[in-house]
Amino acid sequence: MPSIADVTNDAIKKNRSLIDGRWDKNDTKDSANVADLISQGKCHFYDPPQQGLRDVRNLLLLRKRLKKQEHGQRIRIRNNLVAQYFPELDRFWNKSEAENLAIVRWCLPPIKIRELKFDAFVRMVASKNRGLKQRNRLRGVWETAAHSVGCRLGTSAELEAEILVDDLEKIRARINQIERRIHEICLGFEHYQLLMTIPGFGPYISALALASIGDPNRFENASQVIRLAGLDLNAVRSGKKSQSAVAVISKRGKSDLRYGLYQAGLIASSKNTRFMTYFENLLRGREKEKGIRTKMRVKLSAKMLVIAWTMMKKAQEFNPDLLKIE
Image (tube, rainbow, N blue to C red; front, side, top):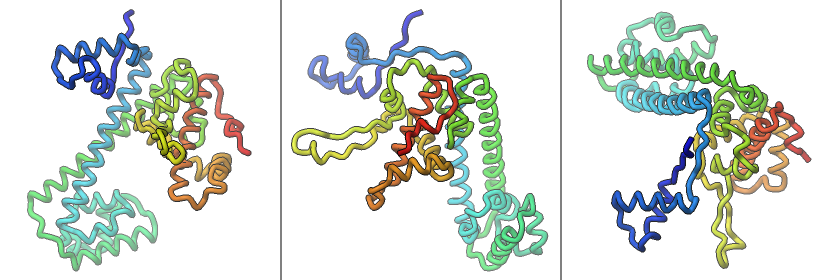
């Protein structure tokens, strides 16, 4: 089977002017440029993974696209409909989104809320009884509706509100369906079960790490794994600036993996005793530095990725002793 190679757009751009000293771009030169990079070995060689792993990667990409659509729908509802027709609802928005969406769908114009008795309003927008805090919040919305300064809602806006809420619920249902399918496929991988034992690694983060790393034996050392997520440090260390250069992460790897690892590190350093101790050791003596907690969580993210890779390579569950807490 022939090997599959790929060159990056960044390498193509930088190598273009090295061929004949010009930056001119055309199809003939592009082909020569790619061939030149491959002949120099400046390319990525791919080892196609098994079908199950390809399915997980495809589903993760589909989930990413749907999450963007979900965010877009939420922003349209809040920044367009609510801000225009019931702006006072915005200060209650972060308390319970399910009830807020029910208000937008069934009684967005405040005049409809004013026509309802409080108990009838609660029954319309609340799917379940969550106690006194819920009633106090809904009472605040109900009382605020009497003094709303929102624009008058027309039939077109009512239809728009209904469609946007329906679309948002459908998108979320599809996301849940995709996540269940990802979990079902990943259960067929031994490494997935091992990754789930790491504190902060849930089904999504474990699937993301599994899909990104793939075969752990294709990496020779931990530095290569860290570069995969773009968590490797880079700095300009030339001339007089070499002594004062501040290294930052390259951000050249997989952004989704990098974000997921940071969230896993945030959870682990907040709720797991061993990781909390490890994180506090990283901060010791540097607590007053600006942004140090974020920097150390990024460092913890890289550590968790190396732990995940080591566990996959050795086929063993999470061992807290890998943290080497001093």
